[in-house]
Length: 374
Ligand code: HEM
Image (spheres, rainbow, N blue to C red):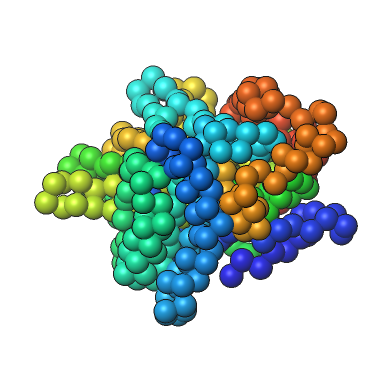
């Protein structure tokens, strides 16, 4: 499922095995955000968990291989500094809060992300229970959402979600870090946001009006032609290009969630990217607008209540982190140029400012592949 294909690296560079970032959204998912408890003991327990995470997934997953249990472990910016210091992934920074004229994307805490996907909820439940047993006393809950596949992959607002996700090699190239950050190759970045929908207001719209909000037809999920698709539709604002006109993709693993008795209906947005600046540009388009003020109409019916960014180490790096930062020794031994953590973070903030997306081109990496629209 996650066969690495190193074609976005030179022939002499091989990309370590990524975690299951390119797996499909799943029939069910648990999205668990945790903080690390104070103290050294908690730090040691979390590092030890990184060494055991893949084994735990195998133990639970092999009980029914057909149900495709996957685990992705993400590490927040502050947690990275606390557990591992320098060197650090080039684009790891806290989620950037966005405040548009009308809508707000808050930044909320989170040291660890567990993204657990499977065909059925029992597999997710068992793996999260085992993970929490391993992390007992070392972490504090921040947020936990259980997503489910809703009929033909519909979101709570009734539209099919995930259609234009990149697939196969395109998905790999959009999400997996290559030679541009060689120490962290095989890793990825993930941004999560929990959205709550105003279903009464949404359901008061006609189907045709909802289609203009989304930019696609509702029943058969066809993109509206450019001449009728509004510039403030969700789809129009989420098609982003680099300086050369190549469309840049992220990989979304969104699922809906709901507690009907409380009137709570939502979408858990989770977007993997090789460089989080791509997702941040999409968020800027949605919340600030492209051009400014032309914000995403979907936000008139959807409120973001969380927002956190994590680095997802490759599988071998995650395992090695159990013993501390394996790159720290190399850095202190030979690389006097290793930047201190906050200097690196500051440089990254400057370079990946969402509107300075052209900076993607300035890095020693191939641009994400051009996407052809069907
Ligand atoms: C309220 C939360 C959200 C809902 C209900 C939602 C739903 C949808 C739906 C139904 C589609 C059309 C089908 C598809 O291609 O997947 C779509 C497309 C898309 N969404 Fe969202 N989405 C949400 C939030 C976001 C956020 C926060 C981002 C980015 C940061 C995003 C990025 C995209 C992208 C890139 C596409 C594909 C555009 C294209 O290439 O046509 N979405 N979304």
